[in-house]
Image (cartoon, rainbow, N blue to C red; front, side):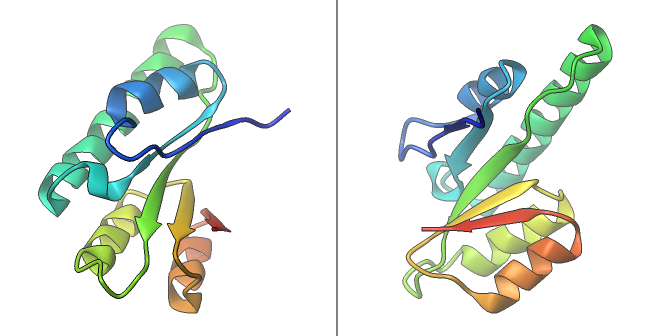
Length: 117
């Protein structure tokens, strides 16, 4: 049964995402839980490095991770955060408050998945 750890505002962060993925659950977090795009990118790197290490050390495949992007026009970071997700090839993007065709196309271009809420 596929399971997703919900991207909980102010609760979900790298530690929760990493542990969920190690347990076979898709770990997700809202991009805006990290207060800057620079910090957001460091979270992406931290998650990827931890999951790569887990897989190397155990020989087990971790579940993919995902990011929740608020695509509403009031989010000034959406484009910068999307570009970071594309750069780091985040496996799953969950959008809140809309579905944006260009975002979906960009994520699908690198093989990522999109869920719209």
